[in-house]
Amino acid sequence: MKVLRKLVSVLLLAVLSVIVCLPVASYAAGGAYVSETQIDIAVGETVSIAVGADNAAGSYSVSSYGSVMANGSDFLDNDFKAVSIYGASEGYGEVYITLDDFATYDEEDLSGSVITVYVNVYAPDGGYTGDYGKSGELPDYNYDDVTQVSDVLNLWLNDEPYSVLTDLSGVEKPKGFTEADGTFEGEKVKTLNYGSEIVLYALWNHWTGDVILRTYDPATQTFGEPATFKQGNNTYYLLKIPNGTEIPEGYTKKELDLNGNKVEALLCDKQGYEDFYYIYVLNDGQSGFYSYDKKEGTLQRTVELKPAQEEEAQPEKAEAKKSSIFSKKIFLIALGVAAVIIIVLIILLAVTRKKYKDLTEDDY
Image 1 (cartoon, rainbow, N blue to C red):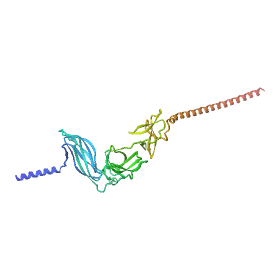
Image 2 (cartoon, one colour):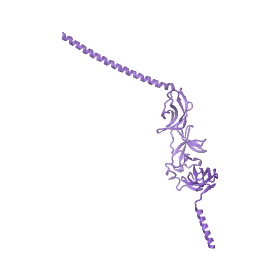
Image 3 (tube, rainbow, N blue to C red):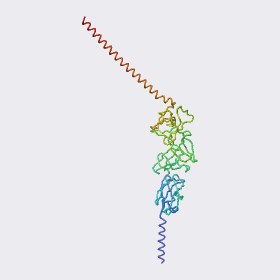
């Protein structure tokens, strides 16, 4: 009997050991889980965890805090999905899986529940340079050069990790812009400014090493493309018409929708000019008026804006000049024909006179 009890005890311990060794899923309110609640990753490394639903269904969203970056949203129905977590900088971070509209098959509402994943981000062996992220070796950039003082400067844009640069060394600057001291969410950064009208922030992509220039709207806390128009290899920055600009007679200020951007423009009041808008742009470091053909979708530099009366008079002057040239041609042609006729008459007269003289001499 004692032997049997010992055998049962050993079997129970063995079963418990196997259960303890199995990977444990972390449940939130019974119907949702993640495969891991604590992970260690290196700076620049991306790992994936599973988010699943057990006899439950609904939508969830992903957010992050601290030294990690993770975002996105999806729908679960008694299955699981992968969530990518990126180590942005050395330190501590957390990833939150929020159940937005979620319930079990037994109609237990789990909406609003949050699963937290705790992440430790450590420095990889050999420093931060080398192969990591999506595209391997980062061209021309060392991660140490862009490690930020604050995690506020690390962000996601179009599902890719970026950092707002505090040093613009090596960044190609568009002509006409000057480097200036700026701030982003309270942190000191460097910006590229065209006066006070355009302020560009330099964003460094952790995965590709590329640097892009974007404007920032503090009200919506979003980055956006600067207002530009691209034609061939040229990029035209769309500007407001400068204050104090003398608007020629016969022109009216209009708002032009150009590639989704609202642009101040001048439109000639005269008939026949409805498709031509004059806008103020910056190109290759020089600013001035350009003529935009709305029908053709093309931009052309304009030397100066002339009053509408002069614009209207141009076709009339051209027509008058054309008429004058035509009249001169007709005159010259008529003069040539008359000269030929006179020469022919002189020749005929000479021939006739010679024949008359010969006949007279024969008679004599």
